[in-house]
Image 1: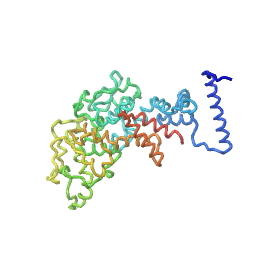
Image 2: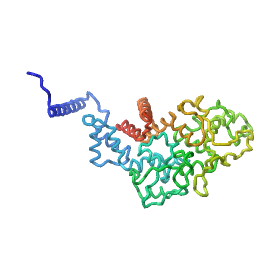
Image 3: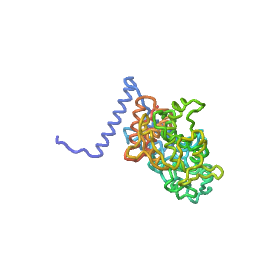
Image 4: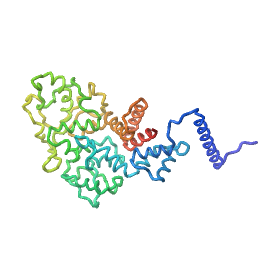
Length: 408
């Protein structure tokens, strides 16, 4: 008998029969106790992906579609199922809102109203804006013109409170839209914008009163996943530590040399980037005094008159050497500059920034920290995917985490 070409119909029938045979064999092996089932079935996996990302049950039609994508004998594309789940409005209006809310306040509480900081995080993730520009871009997300809400105001949060109270869908580009931050009324000029750092929400929480070190510390905590204890290094040069830091707290210089210096020798040179910024609690506005250092930088200047006097908004990254090299600074950048925008680029292009975003997503989706070697390997893979091609896609990070944790 001569060889002949199989028709598409015959091939499809053969593939279908093979799937049935494989499934029958697997069921038999499981029943005989020869193999164990470590994974849920495609339908359960699809449901879990949806629950983890959207926080609500899928409709039957959506579940069937996702099941088809998850099933290795059909589409075998669980990432597509995750993107389907992220199409649910709850992913933006609830999951991402709760994801970003703790970054916007000193108590790190999720129970805060929607504001421009949170809305911008949601919009950037929705629109696949490279997330490494979160701390430097000249953009802000606002409610679209024509919505039945209060207009955007640089001195009030009512605009965003109305979006939330009316249950407007932020997954809709006709509700939440991207604007050039510097063109909005009351904003800082374009060269001084720094993404969410110069949002009203961040300014109200971290530029108010104090000495602007709060903005530095909470940026490190929220976007580099390191607080001051983790980056404490007493071996850096102390020449930019400001006058308000006593060199003999309580009359004991050892406290300064073994404790205070370890944070301030790195923080103060970097926090110089915020020298022209303030939040006016009386007017409710962020302020930018271009070329004029804010008076708060001279608070308690008599504590140590020979300390560093801030004269401009220049900054230096002394943590590029020593133990804090582990933060993975981008050596194609100069490691110094002026203003919050260039500092935001320094942070946003570091390995620590990428790692921090991935670990936060892993915890939010998988409901736990990475806890064993497979988890750590997965996080490393997700960091590589996040940075690949300069895309810095947070949606892909959420999708990867959901697929990895789709089994119990």
